[in-house]
Image (cartoon, rainbow, N blue to C red):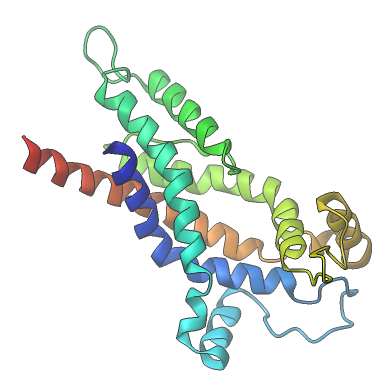
Length: 227
């Protein structure tokens, strides 16, 4: 049940943050393999992209890809938060005297993150649900490092998976993620590697906090009605 509630919590957060994922993808594909200044910029920044997509393609376009995103979140964060929840329920986050242990919480969070990473996600630290202010600050601060480190690979993956293919399904633009990275860096420069970084960052904090909030609420309801 812990894994189910965790997955549902992540899905709830995804419904609210998926539009930023759409914005990020559009910005990453804008001017693909074109030198800066040689193409028309349809999206100037995160907010302009959000408004433009809504006006031109309709509000429904901001939720494109929601179904696979929900599945991904359910599997990945279901494991992350669910594993942490089991550790908490088992009393592993407290010392022998019964006090809460930040070190054990960090260790449990890291282990939960590693298990989530096995499904292809970066490791994020899971914070105890009672420390909401700490979780908010830590999520935003640590998010800077995560986004900066992962942005080039995120851009490459987006382009790799959205490239045209031949009849056999072979990509026509990139041979793999390394080739996508090199081509992007060579033609678009360092800034091309960080397209959509604003949307990535704005999404990370709210998604983390919403996931924790929904998780805590679902668990409270569950334990209230099962006792």
